[in-house]
Length: 131
Image (cartoon, rainbow, N blue to C red; front, side, top):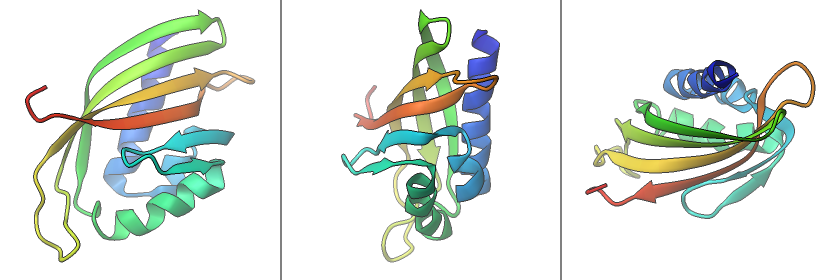
């Protein structure tokens, strides 16, 4: 089952690296809750897509994200807590300037409401450069 959860993460990263807001939103449950590193929250797949669309055309258009480590804990057979440490490069600043690479931690609650695992809750945080 861990393999299936890692596939959700693979799809999450693939959509990010294609800068495809629609595909990115599809790994989330229809009623997902999303909170980014700045504490900005969105509710629902449509809002998550709308939130990412402008960034994928500007500050993240050349970005590349990878997951460097994961930790999975099953709470119930159809509910899992997933931590994913990430590294992001290719970020652009407000004037189009190159920005430093970032590292962080994604914390997901994934659920399996039917035959497919989806991200139901996501919190993202930046980690200090030394971590």
